[in-house]
Length: 129
Image (cartoon, rainbow, N blue to C red; front, side, top):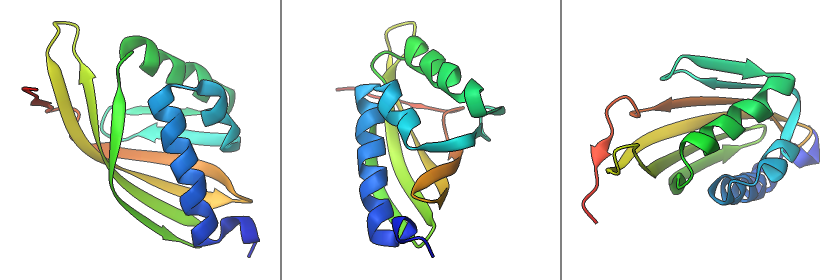
């Protein structure tokens, strides 16, 4: 096994990756991806790969400029991470909403091969801050 795929190493990679998502730092996000990476949001029915991943994520940020994630649980083993999270954003009508989800990340050489997203984004909860 490549030492970059050890569970402890991958926990650190995902920590930096999550920070990049919350900062909406597209360059940092893409630097964690392997060439040909597949981004598939199974809930939304979206699937992109390779060079199409960057513009897809940029579109997510353009539509959700205040999108932020809070981690709930992280499960790491050699070559694989599963991350449970809660997302918050503001809708076009100004309503604050949140939803829960998980990401499944297989790795190779310390880089993310896939990001498989499963969430309740189709039925978000209204947040009353």
